[in-house]
Image 1 (spheres, rainbow over the protein chains, first blue to last red):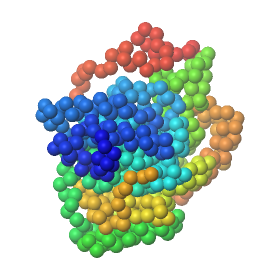
Image 2 (cartoon, each protein chain N blue to C red):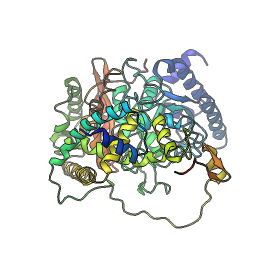
Image 3 (cartoon, each protein chain N blue to C red):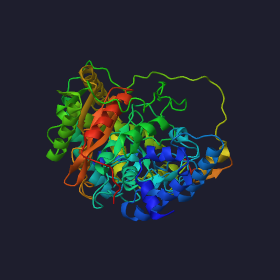
Image 4 (cartoon, chains in turn yellow, red):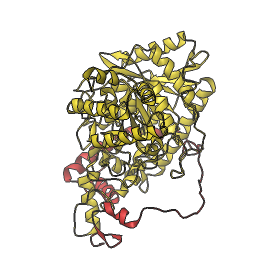
Length: 487
Length: 93
């Protein structure tokens, strides 16, 4: 394909590409070739993937093209996608960014991927912090991904490889997972849109579990319309995930352009203050001002327990980690370090297989759940969770949508926080209350501060994604930002 | 602060091998994290019910019907070691 038609394809949004494939102006195979060539071109700089799958992408795209001839495909099926490496892909290595799964090839596909289509054109398995625990991808056993806006900076995390892939055009969109900001924070740092749907909106079957009461799969895209389309592709009830919601999936594109006239927008006081850099705060204020200009009713709202969100999260998430990661014991899959007895085999396998952050969280969770500490930590954190849910309920009685920064800062330099876990955890201070309450939330690029993207976070009540997306769409239109490929 | 002895005890509960250097580092880091977490103790939540699931889901049941699942040969294909149709492990001590 000629160079200029390639760059023309690369400049399209996923929705625009899907429409061109639908009318056969472009084939899925051409799209896959273009994505593969772009991966070839920039992957050495950004390291978005643990495993690239150019052959698989071409085979699947060929099948999509063949199926089109015999009757139709789902609108999105021919669009090449990057998939976070915690989502099981049948027969394709899935590492979770960990050495303990260095050789693991899942025996089935995650339900969200099958919803998208059995011939999903996967360009690669995107890098992430080990078992999705981290805010920078630096805890991956496969090296950090790099922010396409500045290769010396982190892309955020844990879904940092998914974010850098989208920002760099390695596939038109990506799937990430969000347990405490892991879709939204990297989306913010890489200048793309990241959506965490309502807990249970997307099946977790085949998502290798981190913290089961918080984990949710979400779209990472160039714009809000792509976000709505990708959510449409993956959402739905699944009998294989007992926590998936048996709630009808609405048409997420139908109300998208409805605007914000009369919409009540509340800026969260506690998430705009101390710890948030001034440039980030100003961009959030500017976008909110734009929404007001577009007809929204803007006010301030308090979430008084939000400051307890991070500490509660750092009890609940590690507690669930200590249980979920117990399955990696060298028996059924992944790494085994030989030893004379089974207990020594467990200890050695887990010592060699897990990295620093995974070990820290397993230890923290095991400690918090151990005899004598349970009430002070885990039981208390579960009660804090109730208070945070009540705060949101009060806020949603007065406002339709809440706003804050997604991340308190723009992308930081690689190495700046990796030896200081507490500093790293603060990256998600604005994001974690959302996961504790199970509500949906989206990060939209609001503008640049010191040349780096700033994300604006919107939050709304359970299962109100159509309204949330409509507000985000309006925000994107008033923001001083336009998606362009980097680097 | 949590002592190195406590770190070793918890690591044993988690079946996690740690080097001496890791034990020392973990003692300091876990201590600092726990100190920052301790602030939730200042809230009086005596009468507040705990939340385990934000959507308040209770038991989700399905009809008890047999389905075709992975054949054991397939399930064993990812195992580091197998014997017949079983996962094999070193001596259980």
